[in-house]
Length: 157
Image 1: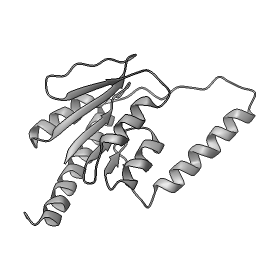
Image 2 (image 1 turned 90 degrees about the vertical axis):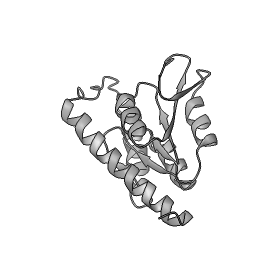
Image 3 (image 1 turned 30 degrees about the horizontal axis):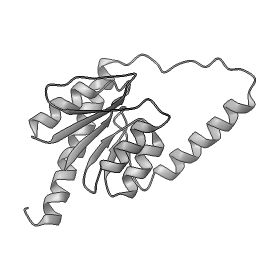
Image 4 (image 1 turned 90 degrees about the horizontal axis):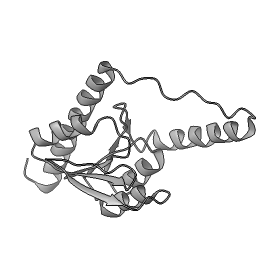
C-alpha cells in the first residue's frame, strides 16, 4: 500500500505525512510547477502545469489497495475504479456507493453556475482545527481498514 496525495493546495499534507510515518507507509505528493512542494518524508513528483496533469499522473501510478487523498471527485472515481481507496480533505470517504451521486451533484452544480449570470461565488469557508482533527481521525481509520483488508487478502493476517 502507498499513499498518493493530489497535493496542489491541499491543506492536509502534514497530517497525511504524520499518519503515514506512524504506520511506515510510503507517501507520494503530486503537484504541478505552480505549487512546488518539499518534504522530508514523502517523495514529491512535480508535473507540468497543464489542465489535470497532476490528476492523470496520480491515476497512472496508483494501484489496488493504495490510498488517494484528493478533493477532486473525478480523481476519486478513477482511483476507486482501480481498486484504490480515496478520501477527501474533509475526511469524507469516497466509495463505490456514493461516488456516482457526488459526480452527478458536481455536474448539476456546474450547469447552474454556467447558466447563472453571476460569476461571483464565495470561496470555501476557512479551515478550522476541528476540520483537521476530523480528517486525521477519518484518515487513520481508513488506513487501518485498508491495511487489514490488504493483509487479509494477502494472507498475512
